[in-house]
Length: 235
Ligand SMILES: [Fe+2]
Ligand SMILES: [Fe+2]
Image: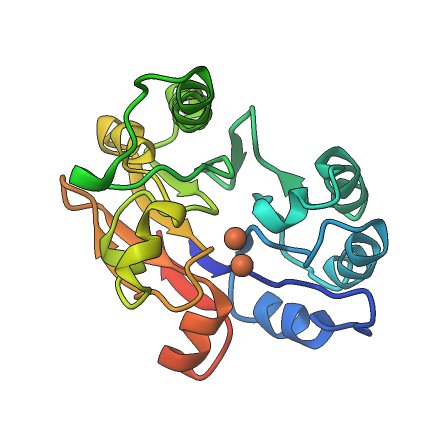
């Protein structure tokens, strides 16, 4: 299966058919289109409606997750409803199977990596913060556990590893992802690829501790590497 992936679309309310031509082009080159969050710039109704119109131009299945920007207006459910209405499968609680390949996805959360990882210690608000990252990892794990496919793709907005955020200032690494998202990915053999966005100035390719390929498909990273805003990944 040829998977096209793109993150960080950041559709703005003044945009006119921003992804229409691209989605038509991708439909000619891939079997599935995966969107890795920050689909809208502020999570506004109008922004989601503009993207929904463009999604209708894709002739292949469109599946993906929301990003932090899609939460900004406090109505991610509304964004989700509008995009689902256009046929996009928005992953969060339930995995989905397309032509024998499993897709499991969550937005993910921040919290850092290695020595820089925030620990659930002290004030309740710190524990709540870390709990959010753990919850996202749990949701991903539960989805991966339900899949019976030989191959699956994990879809995230935040990064599960540090390799693919290299290029971003070290000082903000802990805001770009969480190592806690990586454990469920390495636990299931059927996960063959991981895609994420969020780190606009990161690195295209990295590996989990067990060697699974992770791709940062933020469109800005892809434009610089491939001269086009989407990745094509064989799964
Ligand atoms: Fe973004
Ligand atoms: Fe983001």
